[in-house]
Image (cartoon, rainbow, N blue to C red; front, side, top):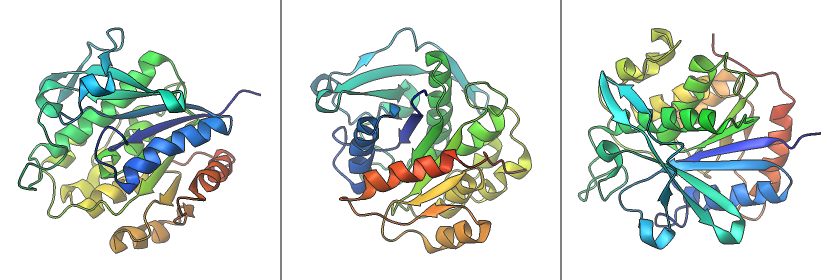
Length: 275
């Protein structure tokens, strides 16, 4: 029996950024799941604040070189990789000069959201999928962490529904206490349209608030995990209304085993699609 494969996609992973609860989980969960006998791959954005020399990032030429078109503009996709030796784990980084050279993550030095965060998120999500395709690595589960990954479930279930690598993939989304105020670019819904994505799929994104980005993720996820003790109440109500299987918050001492069991339960479910 082949090992189940879990793809972890996170907007934040320790030690590449200052430690947060999400970054800690995205660092130690893949290691724990690998030690439980599953195969893993891990992706995050290559923010400009990441010290490439210290963390020994290097470009993977065979995976780089593709252009992604967003809002009628071409953006080169650059893939870098680093190793966390203690975990025997590689982390792949999605990079692009236009989107990820600045020295902050999603806000500027004054704490204001970057105006192009919508495009950065779209580029990241699509870049991960295209890279996994080049790797030829078919994930049984894709586990998304953070609002920055909010469009991954939709692209997997719509644009790659017929792709043999992803046709049987289940998507799990972890919701954290990582809320931003205001909204992303008002044209996000239009920009997010891609192969086989229809206007109805991006209805929430006509007003791209934090809650509506996560509602889009929930729509196309097979299951949801409450990654923080307290999450956005509007999103939590929406999860319950939609009847999505949800794993409640688990403490640092218990989450690896609990998530591992939850993955096995999700793998027993029929993949769902938001039609």
